[in-house]
Length: 299
Image 1: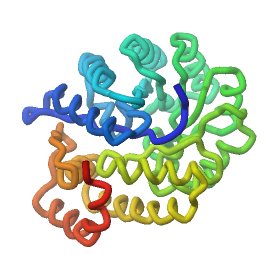
Image 2: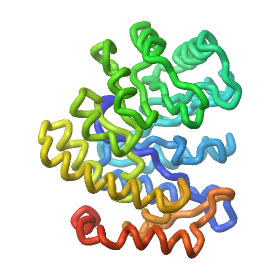
Image 3: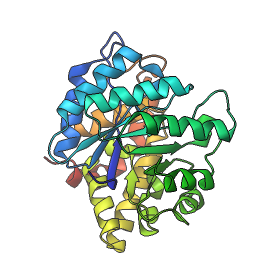
Image 4: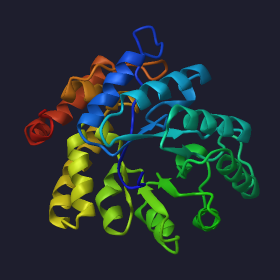
């Protein structure tokens, strides 16, 4: 298994009554696999992981691992407010057949960095899977310092990092002075191409839920050094990012997956379906790009 390429932070899909819908999630995972994405990342932010119960987590991971096909494997989010929870989630992910685990640091209450270090070391000691840190200061409330991340990498604790800071400078700081085998993934779609050009192993792209083939080609072009093509595709991705921001996250991403790919989706409160006004605003922004997106939406 390689820690590189396109990682898709998959949406979690629910039934009309808000219950987890295994069938929808299985079909969604198969569709992304058929588009030849490299990795599915279950239970990330776009996957609404704080809203999923422990029992549902196990079922969701099982379904996605079983449904991933071809070269596509599955990363599982295991971050939690407590070390005990995170360790248990990581152990369950390994038992279910995950290829790697991704851990946001403890959130809501902010422990000292010494405790954060012990948190990652405890997860590493519990599983044999590659462990990636997840830097997302806007939601966690604090940033992971590159110095700490690199020390844990040199000690064999961390295999990589997903950096969703919104800053190219932050991505570069994780690339600088990192061990040679350490994998850095930008978590902001708009930074995908340039981050790979700077040395990132790949990219985590939420837009791939909506137009996976576009993101597959962008990452391949960037990794292959075809800069002009990568820049062309990045502009289209950037337009989709702006379209998705016309409505609330993550519901708008689900709406767009249904609108453009015909995917059956589903919502759980408080992340409800878009209102009529929100749908209209999203579609108004989307319409000028439909022709350009069409080649990436064919079977």
